[in-house]
Length: 294
Length: 307
Image (tube, rainbow over all chains, first blue to last red; front, side, top):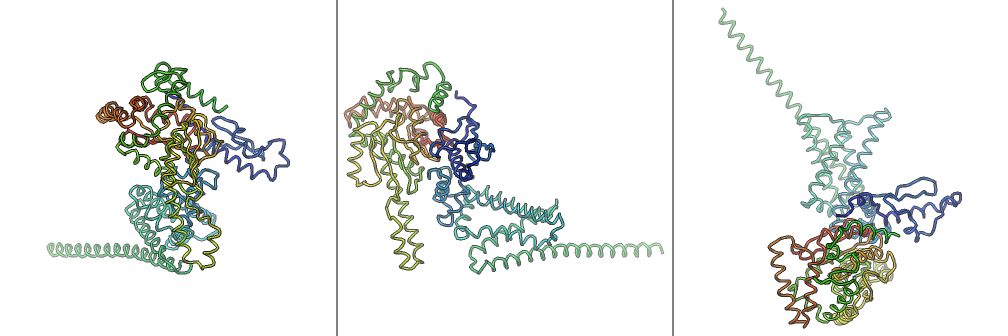
């Protein structure tokens, strides 16, 4: 029976020491006033002199306490973020992750933490893009609420949101087809589908959609289709500044709007026709009863 | 200080009494050597002699005992490692160099693919630019990868060096005599530490794991390939039958040494099962410790990271 207590509290000591060392390096240039407060031995000796324990912390140059405790997930997060800059060169592969780990001062073997096909890297990137989009939309909404900006009509809003999201792919556009194929692997479909639907949901939410009827599904289906098709068009678009893609997007959104207008028109026409028929039926029955009375 | 505290934790969390001795840990002078009980010193000596005796026939015996499947296991280990060029590997108890050679082959082919991709990319450049890139790139076939083979047994290292010469492996390979419980290397040196079918023979497994932690760089990976416990009862019976009836006989016939192979087979039974080894690796400080059973648990690959 081993001690069950300490695993959840254990800090990642090796990587914590690395981060401390790199933070020290950043803070050393303006060390003069706090010299006596914190003697900074050379970075190589850091691992031994770090206070050992479940929550190692040190007092930095500025006198702030910083928690070095970091979970495995956070470290993996940092590695993947660092790996993104190597994607244009190496693709969405374990090599890019290894290069990313190197920049953090970790061994290249840390790429073994992830799958060798780069799935986690791609999913991480997609979720980061989605978060960035949410922030963008939230900021815009705030501006509208404060009255500093005009509320956009629905089609323009959707167009801008999808364009903003797709523009985030531009630095990685060459390797993006590879990423799409990895996202379609059976193993990754649940996560990638989840990310896609939550992104579409987000956009509609900020567009002001509060429907609780069947419209909720149709709206999301329509926007998902618009997004996916535009993404595919973007893959093989070679026009300057992706003009063709944005024009395609504009047309698709306009189509969707027309479709929904037509749907409402069809509905109201249908209602009018039904009412007309009812009226005719009532007139006929009245005429019948009046004749019977006479 | 950390060493002492880790060892203290290891002692405190072990069950007391007879089972401790059978598991071969810091339980005082009594240890297991196969199914016999010996002291620590005796155990080290006996194991040294075992491998001294079998060194020349080690590879042949591996092939006949496992019907050649050990090659597949070792291939799987290196594939799991997925090393990229520039990796520094320490192969402990790597005597005859099986893992080291596979590592070199793997890295060489990855490097070739890398270079091919670079050349494809170069097809858009002018002759001048291509020539300049030749000056800059060191077109070394291994991409600066290196493997250090460390073994406690001189005979095994000798056989390994001969094999390397015979098979034509020269660059990126080093042979060092050393004890897994006390490695002659500095801290934070290696990217990957492997020990294939060796940790079973280490007298103090916890020390070996701590040494592994010490010599690995932050982010480095620990990989252990070892015989483990089969949980399927039917398969376990067949496996036991094969181990105890066939293998020592093969040992006598092929290597002329029945006792050594009896020891080998018994030591497999004495070795901690998968979950317990996983716990020991976590005790040494490794994170994301996991194991993969091969062939229903006949062999298991344990992996951990120094984070």
